[in-house]
Length: 177
Image (tube, rainbow, N blue to C red; front, side, top):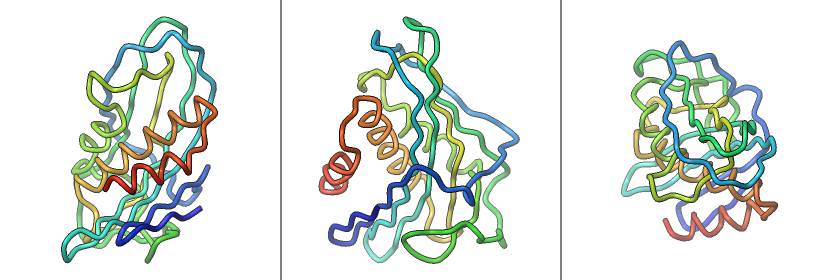
């Protein structure tokens, strides 16, 4: 489903097979878990945000797998080599021209920061929230685009874990941009 407001567009879906990738490296962090039980959920977000004269683009998808209650939530972002020229753009996009599948090392920390939130962010149930889908644009992607995509994905996963409407959540986030 696509949500558009002003120069901002967001697509939300449950899977995007063409954006699957294998990262050679992983960046991660842990946060204290909430005491509530978790369940497996999956979501993919794609953003296309007009910002000044540029358009920011990012696609990010993750799976949450519940773990032992009372422990921590682990956030993981697999990534590859730094951004380079000539990436193959075969990843379907709901919001524009095709993207390159993968997570360059340039954007991994920003995506993790958005996904994990800060120490004061709402806690997730114990388990693992791992990025399994990503797509980028050599010109339009940036650390800020992946930070925003991580923030948005975190909100969508949280809504799914609490049986809330993820589209209402996305509309609220996009409206705040």
